Length: 203
Image 1 (cartoon, rainbow, N blue to C red):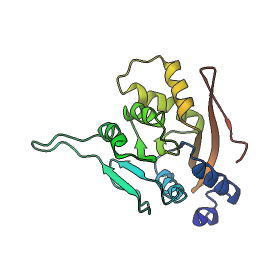
Image 2: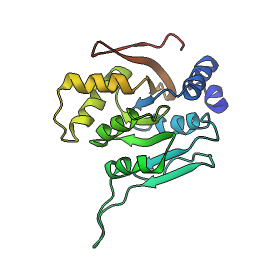
Image 3: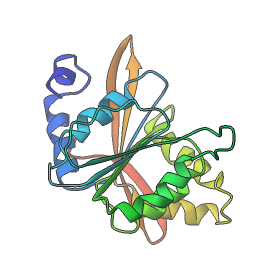
Image 4: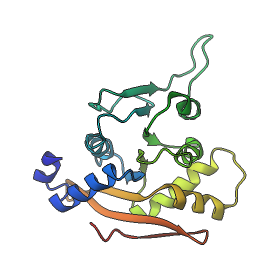
């Protein structure tokens, strides 16, 4: 985190606010475009997770280097001759049997978003994931589109409410004039079944 502050990816105040969110077990969605540093930021934030907590990490390709002793690492597998594929959705469905305190998904791309929401709603607060989006505001509809790819038949409003009840913060990272920078942090809430997002007052 000190390196990100020195590189002006974020300020010391934002760094401390993010640390408090991790320790406070907020569910955080990191959004951004390709090559903006989402994976790097996720890796750094994971450092703030207490050592005694059991982390379950799910990735399509091993990219994260989380330095925790109580870590269970899952990786997807492509279909091979006589061997079925193992998808992110399969791994998320199996995750709860491994008693994780927190779940980290390297990147949400499709229908696994629905399974992640289900996991977040069963007591696995303090989880982290990344998502491709052009802005923090676009991260919510992008996440909802991924949920719809699961084939689940839910009204769009219900999906948004589910996201509002599951995700606490959206951290958007972008490349601005050739430099990676956290451009916005949104606080997410659900009130009376309606999702609301606003700039985080602590950042």
